[in-house]
Image 1: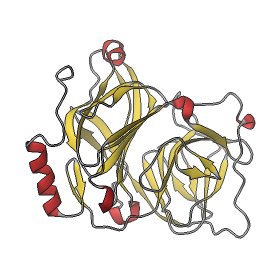
Image 2 (image 1 turned 30 degrees about the vertical axis):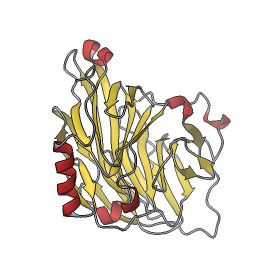
Image 3 (image 1 turned 90 degrees about the vertical axis):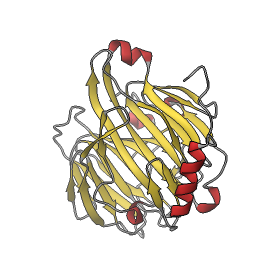
Length: 318
């Protein structure tokens, strides 16, 4: 998992432990992601399975793609398809993908990079393995997160952000035993590179064996931890977690995580995603690639797509 890293964590800015007056969040539940299939047939882990949109709001959907090692010409992706009403955030830890969209956005997403696409009023895009991965094969691992947009921004102008690994904010905990890669939002007073419509925090964390991570957390946000790999405990009550599980915390203004002294994962570390956002608290109607507030808006989205109102695939990319 060669995502953005640091030679010496002790040289990174440190996030202080929460102040004594902070209330640590207890664990609401731990759920396990099942396997599914997406796009042209690649396997994923459904990160939010077992939870509800009310609990994950403003996040709608989370897929862990891999880790999988492809043989040459075996890698798969997601061919051209539409979206409306939300944002797709694709973060890679291993491999390469190529993003193209009908709004002119695109490029190669490499290890440690994030592509942030605001679908807004409607866009067509595809995400495919790069020529390098297709020809040579190799390890592929990433995550796609869907972030909802409030009613007032559902039909906003589409946009694309390429967040390269070099622009991630690298931080460590109070004793230098965990590495935080802040992608978007604010944690511990530090700001991530991603520009968000919806107030959120998003980070990839590596916890080394025996690490304890205690963070102040925005009280108006929910708090979710998705475990990419490894084992540990969540909350002061030490609720166990393992790979492919989602930890959903109750309210409060601090969170606590601990990694086991011995790890059986391939990385020998705990790899997890920290997610938090201010709930939008609006009706959500989700149908395929569209996320709107009413069924009528879904019908309108389907009609607009069929009539070519969400863009046209450029001739050079079709």
